Amino acid sequence: MSTDAFDVSIERCPAYQQDSVERAIASAAEKAGFPSIDGKTILVKPNILNASAPEKAVTTHPVFLAAILRFLREKGAGRIIVGDSPGFQPGSSAGKTAGLYQVALDVNAEWNEFKQGSLHQAPAGKLVKSFVLADVLETCDMVVNLPKLKTHRLMNYTGAMKNLFGLIPGLAKSAMHLRYPDKEQFGTMLVDLALSVVPTFTFMDAIVAMEGEGPGNGTPYPLGLVLASASMPLIDWTAASIIGYKPEKIPYLADAMQRIGKNPENPEYSCGPESVQTVRAENFKLLPYEMAHPSALKALPGFLQKLAVSATMRRPIFHEKKCIGCSACVKICPGKALVLDRKASGINKILIDDAACITCFCCHEVCPVNAISAGKVLHRPRRDRKLP
Ligand code: SF4
Ligand code: SF4
Image (cartoon, rainbow, N blue to C red; front, side, top):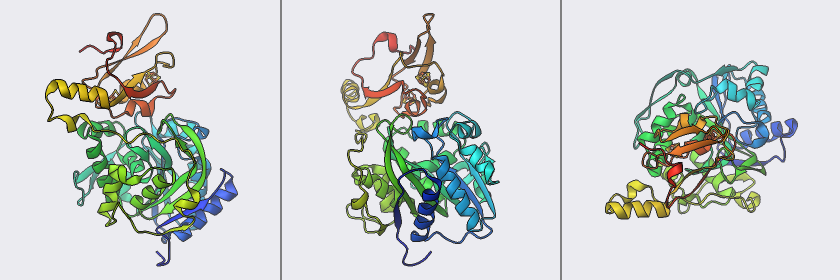
């Protein structure tokens, strides 16, 4: 890496127009010190959360992926593998809807479904010292990480580090939610995972970002930016700041900064040619900083705990008028808290066992029709409850 490179490069790029995206990526790469990859095997990891059309801003845009793949070819990459593992769908079928699968084939890249896992060591992990990750990772010299900048119902913000959670094959991701239901622990695990994947270089698709009910049901926000960095904590910190968060209030971002030796109260690093101040988004709809998880309330007596949870925690709320009965939420739910009740009237009703729900919002993430919102539930009507 060039010594005068920026820690994070921020380039303007107003639209998914092929030439301008290619220019922005090449410039961002150079200014952030993209390394030599001559003859190397590269794993390209877009964000394919689910089968969504590109204009919904749920997934990395196909024009962005195409520009990256051309860039990697020009830089002399030997073998290029593209893949992801959405929660409950094969990567290729979600990738086809997102327009990404065909793009990979067009430049003779290989597609990998991340079906098989193998043990990956994370010796510096605080909480997790080894993960089962897509086995293809072990055959690659470098990961080129292509997150989409989005809000996230559980973690507030999702970008570079969270995107690597997709290296965990299929529904094993749900098991991680169950194992680390506490938001802070889950965040620590995410940082353990992300920092164990080296070397990684991130190009963030922030040309159209997602605000509001991210990561699956928010609103596209034309931000007009491409970010690049060899550091995931720094690029995430920068992106979260651009959209208006105080990143020090997002525990996993603060944790990651501390682990790379930066003070979250006043981190020193370089951005260019633009800065956070020159590109800051206006009126970007953020999700509120989350309150404590039930585990943090364990010291309270039972009835107070219940009251505190009802008064402070947001829970999933299911809207039967919107539900199309696809069962995606039921299948992905780590707590097995949901059942689909198909009524003779044609109405699809999702019943929930609040005692089994760990408020991970995986259901919210995968619902294709925005039929799940989040809110405080003081009393769930009996007709909406899943009975044990
Ligand atoms: S109901 Fe939704 S939020 Fe609750 S555990 Fe299941 S997937 Fe997570
Ligand atoms: S709530 Fe959403 S994810 Fe669940 S069954 Fe209905 S449409 Fe599918």
